[in-house]
Image (cartoon, rainbow over all chains, first blue to last red):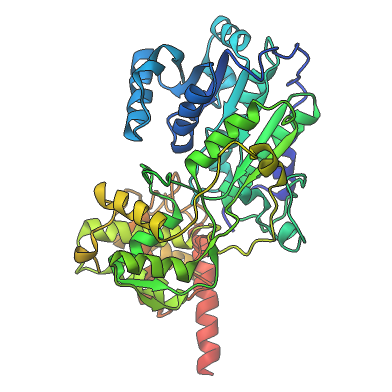
Amino acid sequence: MTSHQPTQAQIVADSHLPPEITFTKPLSPYCHTPRAACLTGATGFLGGYLLHELMTRTQADAYCLVRGSDVNEAETRLIAHLSNYGLWNEAYRPRIHAVPVHDLADPQFGMDDAAYRELAAKLDVIYHSAGSLNMAFPYDRLKRTNVTGTLEVLRLAGAEVTKPVHFLSSMVVFFTDAHLDDTLLTEADAPRFHETLKGGYGRSKWVADRLVADAGAHGLPVTIHRPVRVMGTAATGAMIDLSDILPLMLKACVMMGQCPELDVRVTMVPVDYVTSAMVHMAGSADGFGRAFHYFHPNPAPWNDMMAMIRQIGYTLEPLSLENWKRALKKRAASKTETKERREFFSNAFLAVISPHFLFYRRPPMDAGHLEQGLAGTGIVYPEIDAALMRTYFTYWQQVGFVPAPAEAG
Amino acid sequence: MIDDTIEQLRRLVAERLDINRTLEEITADAPLLGDGLGLDSLAIVELISLTEECFDVEFGEDELNMDSFASLKALASVVVALRHREELAIA
């Protein structure tokens, strides 16, 4: 129904690696124990934690492709970003190199030939976590960042010396009718395109996921990492960007004093679980060519999660989803609410009616490769319980995202 | 019928919403969000309320999804379908 929605054939065509991108150069001998790792998306939520893991789990210097024109400014932004999550350590400074780029989707990231070749020759491995998470945008708007940006990363992987790409994908690539009736969705399954893949985000991630797999089929060592919804750590709950549907909906619920009753389970993984596992798997000898799935083995039923939030002290009157949506829309349009509150309710309303995967019925999923790879490492996920929800809400209260129970509703 | 509805919606957007677009710029196919008509979430909510008021319809669970707000043409077809459903209910 969107005006210039690309056809299924166009989307599938976008997922094939263009013939000019090849991987004929010798593989970096340091690809498992890198001296120089490239990181995209370091100023994003997961990317920041990934940079931290690279600092703590490897000896590598990190070359972070950051939007901007000035090295110092880009470096300052990186340090501020890590500091916001309590991850900055002064000892990292000599190992972190900001590489200012005009745009990840520009040919050679907008770098001149000499600088590009120098960078390409130096790197042993690439972690590609950059991408736009905007759920309201159509495919055409997200294609540049999520698809063309990935193509440029694959081009870099083949330039001068071949270096593996560890790619941050998403489980949404499977959330279509094509896989709904799978008896068990495993990491060996390739996501099949289906027109029921909702929204530009899911479609652009599917194309990028398939591009990386296609590069793998053409000789590039790759790993693909597909998490479900990524949330704050169990230790701090820190999350700066709270535009995801789950935090927005939870905030709307406590501000309205009303919640929908839903027969769904909420699956999510803490960010540090994903990033520590990614860096660990990238360093293991038998990971190449594999995909890894990150989901919670014991997702919380939505209504139980509401009960956990009531335990924190919030009032939540249960409504049907339809009535809750109506109540939310009414708040967003209400002239008795302040502009600030109306803006929030509108954003939450838009997020609820945008394509999202919170209510998606999932086939049974398996993460055997990941479990096998993480056995004995101590990398485990926390339970989704009242304590975890309290950590999240405590952080959200501290940053002013949600009101304290006494001021809510 | 759909063309009349699109015309009414175009005028509604031009006259009642606080956006910097002339009637000529408000085309049936332009995306409502982002580069198209540049509506933000507040404006979308206002457009829903205005549409419900002007056409005497109520958006339900099936209509409240982003496909309905892809463009004025998409919105018009939702309005036409809702009005048709209400006429059936009355008849």
